[in-house]
Each structure stands twice: as structure tokens, then as C-alpha cells.
Length: 617
Ligand code: C2E
Ligand code: MG
Ligand code: MG
Image (cartoon, rainbow, N blue to C red; front, side, top):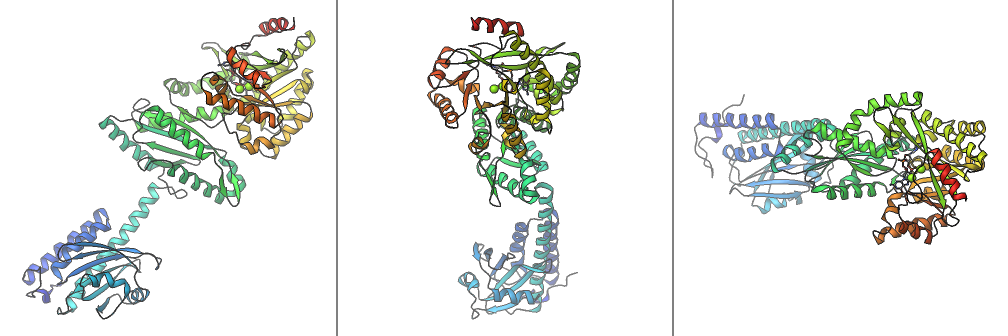
């Protein structure tokens, strides 16, 4: 309960009406109510300062009011807000003297300074014609965290009442600050991720909801990018959680700095981030952003002198095309991301309508695939690999297909990923290798076998502990020499290439197995690893081959890859040759082996035999 402010009644002050005791008392209560209300309702410190600025001069005959917030670190500059009674506002950067701080910390009742006390930090106030300063400490959790300064003309007596009112306002500020900080930290805990300091899952969803309604109103497109880091687990394994956190923080910063202010970057999961582009101007703009992010995230991250390489897979959904609500958009971006990941290299993909049904059918497909292995629904096709100089078949790649009882023939891109995720890949891979090796042995016996048979190995499978032993056992069982085998691995295997993988590759090569890097150029393409990795053949992905004859730049990419491989003393095999121009170009650039529809589509056993016999003739 606050007592009436007797002294103020009848006092002649500029800007103040003469009021009766009662009137001042009830005004005072009203002001307090208003301030308390403000503190409790929105805990906005700025707003409390506004109220203080508007009320204090009506109760205290002052010429200037100022509030400065202090930082914990006494050397930090902090802002000082000043109101002069002519209604003008001023803002100063202030460095509060250590000495003044010390005095304020010691005395909750504040200090009274005269103009003669020259403290440099008070200079801006004196410059505003402050004559006598009453400074009150504002405590938050018993610590000096702000200062309320009230200035009086020299002839105003600083009474006990004035001090008491001032003290009251200073206390209010303290409460407000405490609540603000608490609310802030609560807000922070609820909405921000402690590691990256980025908005968290919850904040992301909230923001997406508001962007959706805005986009709805203004007929905009909103893009949701689901970013997943490949290879992050390795960072944790090597650098520990502290290192992992440090790298995650860098990832967050890197994404943040390469986007516009209006875009939201949030940490959505362990190694997953979501970016919201509130005004996505068509697919090409969004793909540019995605491409840029993939590029920047492929640069190494440093921690403790070590460099870590991560890879980003990005799935994208767009409002309104891919969904009208938060859940649908995030889920669709996630599905798209999973598909990118399934390909095993860093890329981005948009959600498409079929993708959705694919996800829904995924479970059914996994169940069917289990059956397919039992019911013998998988079969192989064989695509010849042609030596560009002798025009002979030097190899044949075994490609798996699935004859689904209802859906018809399903290409491997649609079920290999499912097999990988559901652990069926081991069984599937073993089946393919067994059939292929048996077939190859038959061709050898018939005298129509090329030098080698190429087998695709999923990274996930290759990393399994007994893969190499099991495979060599299979070769022995089917009577195929290791020198007749080429194993195609993808760049994704390089992502977490450790001693184990290198040792396995070396062991296989020692036995005479050739190692080919499949789909080269679409994935990781880290030159450092490429130099270290034991392999023999580099297969240029068909997306580069397809560009031959279309744009000059990509002619160059193919040439560069060929030269690079040759520098490393590797053989080059180009995939997906579809026309004469491409073939001629590759031949001219010194590419040794080629594969593609123009030379031959993947063939059934019978058709391959016909093809081989024709070539032999
Ligand atoms: P890949 O190893 O890069 O195989 C080449 C793919 O390109 C094959 O697709 C082949 O049919 C296709 N192709 C060949 N020539 C041309 C051409 O001139 N134009 C075009 N547009 N495409 C051509 P397919 O059979 O659908 O296989 C897709 C991918 O599935 C393969 O890519 C491979 O990564 C994977 N895969 C296939 N069989 C197996 C397998 O037994 N195990 C594993 N782990 N993966 C497999
Ligand atoms: Mg292949
Ligand atoms: Mg390939």
C-alpha cells in the first residue's frame, strides 16, 4: 500500500497541475496498476519504460528521465534511453563508469550527483541540461541490471517522498526485467534449439502455419525444404558429442548466412534442418537455393583442427501444390528427401504426386518384396559394356527387376531403397549375385562370356562385416574367378569411408576383383577421397552423357572427368549413351568403355546370348 505523496501536493512544477492529496494518490495507484498490468500481461520491457516515461514526470518534478540497461560485462556498451520533458526522446550508447556502478550496487536507495561530479558516462545527460541527478539501481535477481536516472533543476528539493516514488518505479522496472528475462528464457527454451540457437521443430511448425495463411491471402507459394545431413553420425563417432554439436552449429550458421532474412531456418531433428522460403518464386528459384545449399554444405566443417565432410539431401514441397496444411507439406518434403537419400548422393528433389502414393504404398511394397524373394519374382537383365576401341563386349552389367504379380515389372530405383531400409537388401543382393554368377559361369562354359560381369553393390550392404568373405565364398561356390568380377559401388560409400571399407576394397582387388565407382559426378565427388580410394573404373553418370551435344559447358564436365580418371590411372566407362554424337565424342576424348541404349538396352538371357554371338561373328 502506497501512502499519499504529501510533498507533491501544491508544489509548483513545470508540466504538473496542482492536485489534491487524494487526486495524486489515486493517480499514483492508477499508474501503478497500469504498469503492473503491462508487466504481467506482455512482459515487454520497452513498454514498461514507455509507461514509466509517461507517468513519472507527473508525480516527480523532474526535467529528464533516463533508463539504461546494463550488460553483465561492465565493459559492454549499452543503450540509454532518455526522455526530456519537452517530449523529446534520445538514445545514447553508454558506458557506465565502474565507480558509478559500484556505488549503485552498494546502495539500493540510489545516489545523488551534482553537476560538479564529472563522470564521463554522464556527459550526454549533462549535455541535455540535467543539473542534479538522482540515480537508482534496478536489480534483477539481486544484481544491478539497469539504472533509472531522474534529473532535477537545482532549486527542486529532493525530498524523501520523491526518493520513495523513484524507488517504487525503479523496483517496478526490476520486476519487469526479471519477468522479461524469465519469459524470454522460457520462450527460448520452448522455441529454440539450444545447440544451434535456431528455431526448433515447434517454432518451425508455427512459422509455417503463419506463412501458409499469409500465402493463402496473397496467393503466394511457400517452399519447405527438408534438409538431412548424410555422414553426420560419423562426426559424432569421431569428434564426440561436443564436436558434433560444434559442427551442427556451423551447419546452422552456414545455412542461415546463405539465405535471405525472411527465410526461416530451423533445426528439425538430430541432423535435420527445415528451411521455409515464404515467397518461393517458382521452382527454378527454389532449386537454385537448394543447389546453393548443397554446394555450401559440401564444404568441409572444421572442428579441433580436423575437417569433416557432410552431405545434404534436400526434399522440397511447395504450398499450395503439394499440400495445404503444415503436416502435409512437411511430410511431403520429408518423403522427397528420403528419395534423394535412397539414391545415395547429395541432391534435391521436389515432391511429386506419385511420390506421395509411393510413400503410402511403401509398406505394402516392402511386404510384397519379402514375398518376391520367396516366390522368385526377381529376375535379371544384362546390359553389355562395349570397348570403344575394339568394339568388343568387355563386360556385362547385371540389373535386377521385379515382376510384381499385380503391378507388373518394377524398376530397381523403386525398390532398392525399400530393400535397403528394411534390411532386405542383404538377401536381395545375395540372390542377384548368385543368379548372375551362375549365369556368367554358363556363358563362360558356352564360350560367349565377356571378360567381366559387373554387379551393383549397395553401400549399406558393402559395409556389412562379412560381406567380402560371403562374396568370395559365393564365387567359389559358383565357380567364377574374382578376376571376372567388377563391383560397382556408389560415391555414397565414400561418405563414411573408414579403414574397414578401404581394407575390404583392397582385399577384393588383391583377389583380382575390379572396383568401379558408379554414377560418378552426381554425388560426393570429393577429390581427396577419390585419390585415396582403391578403385579401378570410373563410371560417368548418364546425366552428364545426356548433355553431350546440348550445351558446351557439359561437354567440358565429361572431358574433365575423363582426364581426371586418366590422371589417376583409372579406366573410364560412360553410362547411358543414347546417340551417335555422344558415342563419337566419348571415343574422341579417350573414354574406354561405354554402355547405353544406343549400344544395347539391358537384355534378357536369350537376347544377350544373341547379341554376344552377333558381336563375336
Ligand atoms: P546403374 O548401376 O547406374 O545402372 C544403369 C541404369 O541405367 C540402369 O537402370 C539401366 O537400365 C539404365 N540405362 C542404361 N543405359 C541407358 C541409356 O542409354 N539411357 C537411359 N536413360 N538409361 C540407361 P536400371 O536398371 O533401372 O537400374 C537403376 C539403378 O538401380 C542402377 O543404376 C543401380 O544403381 C540400381 N541397381 C540395379 N540392379 C541392382 C542390384 O542388383 N543391386 C543394387 N544394389 N542396385 C541395383
Ligand atoms: Mg551400375
Ligand atoms: Mg550408373
